[in-house]
Image 1 (cartoon, rainbow, N blue to C red):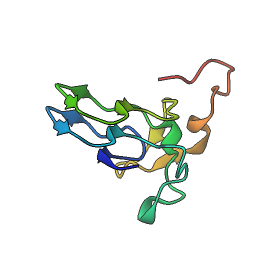
Image 2 (image 1 turned 180 degrees about the horizontal axis):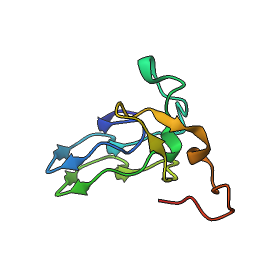
Image 3 (image 1 turned 90 degrees about the horizontal axis):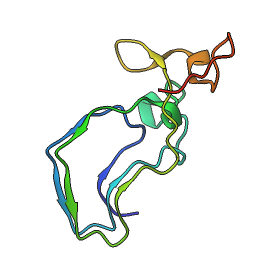
Image 4 (image 1 turned 180 degrees about the vertical axis):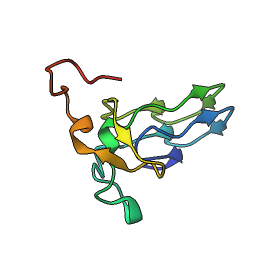
Length: 103
């Protein structure tokens, strides 16, 4: 889909962007590449990346959606200094003790 802002996973901060007249103004299709792309392939879980800060967005004139989050289920993913998953169990729905791992 044509998008003004396209990103896998939601960890990036979106601050004060202006986007107009795209099919989807902000599109985050985490389910398209759940293991990442390029150098990040196999090092991320895009469906479960925690949300970054979203503030001051202005999106209008989109043919479909202003903010299309697709299949995003943010969790308390443990990541290293490069943003890659350091503990794959942290991408799971529940923690080892059975408690919810939602973010």
